[in-house]
Length: 321
Image 1 (spheres, one colour):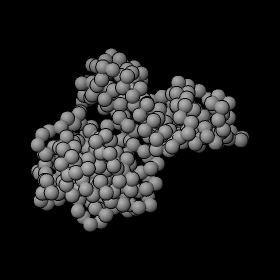
Image 2: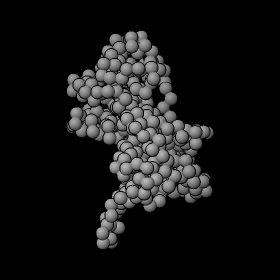
Image 3: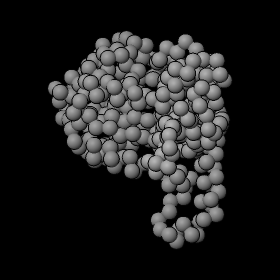
Image 4: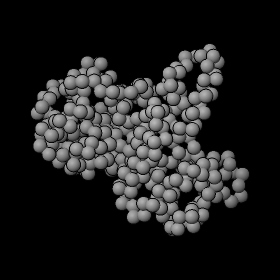
């Protein structure tokens, strides 16, 4: 890619000449990000696709600008932009050099790298920029295992993490125009709160879904992206149909007691494959494990290992292995 192509892409994702949409402020996460940035560490934002990582980055950028940081001193790169055809450390360095040439920033530079796991070898470039103190770095990724593995080996002691989830119910109320200040607000709006809670249980708390009129369509889109981009493509799955079937089985059998052996028969794959696929789902935040409480296990003569899978829209599945 030549420098003119790169700067054209970067202009679309940056606040240099215009304000970009940043959504409804999620103050709890934003305040933590501000504090993390002051530590001088690499700030790492992880979470599921659609959880709101990119908008949190934009909200942090707007806050920096509001507090006096020059727009030219902030670089935002979205690595899911299809116009970036080559994703490796060479393109990272070239993007950085083009940014310096065209924007000529003076003073502290802030670099935001969105969905950085798409770039092969990103962690080495990030470490170099950090150690040379060329910029303050905020990076995001949708794959928990990828980021944690690489960060633990190459960025030990150099990063601080923020895990972002879909909206809590309190945030969900704010997104629906219901900001409760005290107990009187709660008492006076109880019926509306109960109505919204039912919708929250039905559709979940992905920010864009909450605000969209096409909730089902958008959720299907998230599901397909998680399965195809975060799993099939990244882990080179040879049986994508089986993976897809297992994911749908989990998400349509909420709170059911299941064994990996029974899933082996259901999917016609080995128990090891079922377990491997199941952990992949956790890696990309589709579901996660919850173990039995110690008190519950204490009352069992021969306690079995129990796992719970929870979908991020507040639905649960119990798995026994």
